[in-house]
Image 1 (tube, rainbow, N blue to C red):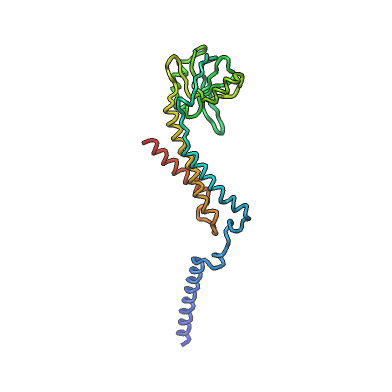
Image 2 (tube, rainbow, N blue to C red):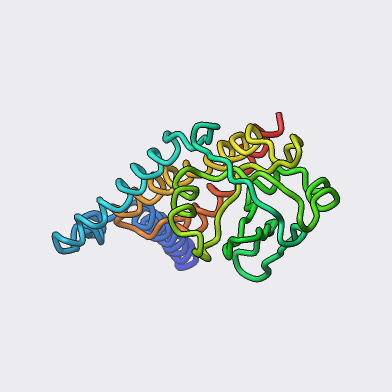
Amino acid sequence: MEIKATAVNRFFIVMSRKERRLLKFKKASTPSKVEASIPSAFEEAPLWAKILFIAFPILLMAFSIYGFMRDISVSDKDLKTLNVTLKAAPTYVKKNGRGSSAYINIRANGYPCNFNIYSLKFEATNTNGVYTELFKNDRISLRLLNDDYEELKSDPESDDDISVYGLSKAGTSYIDLNLVNKFNEEDNHYTLLGVLFALSILPYIFLRKEPKMDLRTVVFIIVVVFSIVLYLIHKT
């Protein structure tokens, strides 16, 4: 009888252990009322912080959409021609370090400023022709934005750098303005990242629990995926 009683006791002990494990599992998987009532960081923040939390992503989204929608193309009516004589042959300039970039520097007689072919205009330029066909004392034509042209005419001694949108010599053009606009339009698509970033951070404002994925990881994934998609679209 003692043997049977011991066996029965062991049976109930094992069952009670299983029940306790099941009960712990249910408690871990089901949030308690106390946990569910924990306020988010947004709810605990003062009024000015709440306004800032909401305003930042909304403004970021608005500016990003505006930047994407605005017309950034440059046409002939936006440009004026400046005829100059080269002080020296155009030179290639490479800036290293953070924000490194390359551009073509042009110096002209009578003007202390630098005329530079920057960024996407550089990619739309016949660089081989610029380096092999333009020399000191050559007469060339530069196409500048209307505002830059007027400022230069009003102050010829200005040493501010001026961006060049067109370059030609004896009827030969070295910058394709259509390509400049095409590259600018493609590059402008990246402003939509601001919209995606704003949409990704909004949920984190109201979260009551620790998210499974931190915001930096989410932003990184968005940037990588968006860049790949744009690359594939522009290559087709």
